Image (cartoon, rainbow over all chains, first blue to last red; front, side):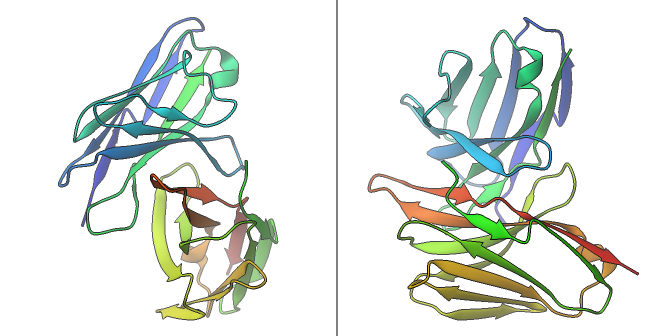
Length: 114
Length: 113
């Protein structure tokens, strides 16, 4: 089946630094990937849609300069949280759509900003 | 904005009982999907029901969809302790250029021995 690999699974960083999260489709090409954020005991909120070779589409209220998305190849999308602050601490999950349909999710990245 | 509302927010049952979770959504959809999430983990796809389907089964799972009421339900029969997790409905909206999933608020299911 289609697999999406997400790294790192967890990261702790100091306030003010930047953190990069990678999302790779292992056995299929993904022209579109999705980035979600999930706060404890809450649902997944779509942050942005990552488009290979073009700019990402951000959902309303998501700062594109803070959450930089790069989708430079058909198998890799990255989310960089710039100048992270404690309120950015969350669980970030990516997903992609395999050619044969459905959505496949990464295992998520737990970001803690101290 | 959040597309789906789920109820109950939390459900505690004993092993062997059935668990029913409900999801309501706001706009027209292509399909509705149910996912499971163990604490702090990624999502596992459970079942997909298309907008022209009314009921679907998969093992101990039964999903219904009522597009006139914009609602869906997930029934887990003969629950097991291993079913303890959060369950989310997600609607696949065709926005014209690309579809995307929008998740409901989720139901936290606790199955006790």
